Amino acid sequence: MSRLGKELRIIPRTAYVLGIIAYLTLATLLWRLAIVQDPQASKWPPAGQIAISYGLSLFILALFLLVGYVNADAKRRGMRYVMWTFLALLIPDGIGIILYFILRDPLPKPCPGCSVLLKKGFVFCPHCGTPLQPTCPQCGQAVEIGWANCPHCGTKLPAHPLRAA
Image 1: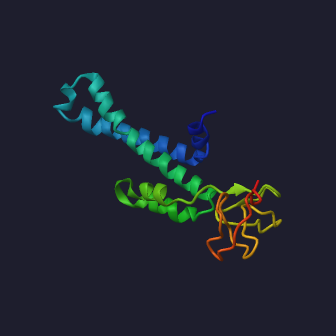
Image 2: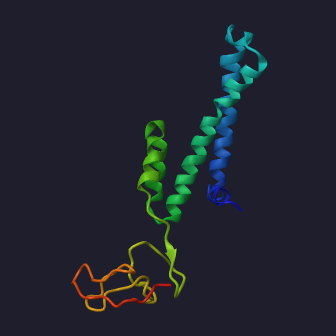
Image 3: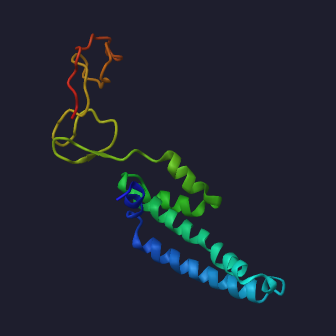
């Protein structure tokens, strides 16, 4: 399965159901009010009438699916999903959704020792104590692989520090 397919699977069914209901409602209203009752729109070719009424309604479906995705993705990342859902829904013009994608936290990664999901930035697993990244032998602060000296205390680092799994 592609990455897009995996990402789309996290959207709750509620968002699909509400989106389809809103889509059909808006499409029907556009058809009845804008196309059928407007004398100029009734002169359009049938393909244009269908495109206007059902094509424009796809935006409401996309909005519901995006808000559902924000809810599920924020929950998956351990963020405040209720707050982000309301922001995505209530800030106009999709700015709330754009803000979510800019400000979202990275996905948590499993600990190699106990498989508990951990947020980025941990040096050791708080559950089992497994080192998650190399540390300075002097001060214990996290260091990057390939650094010659510790940026926190200046200690010369070993040539090949222990690699985190």
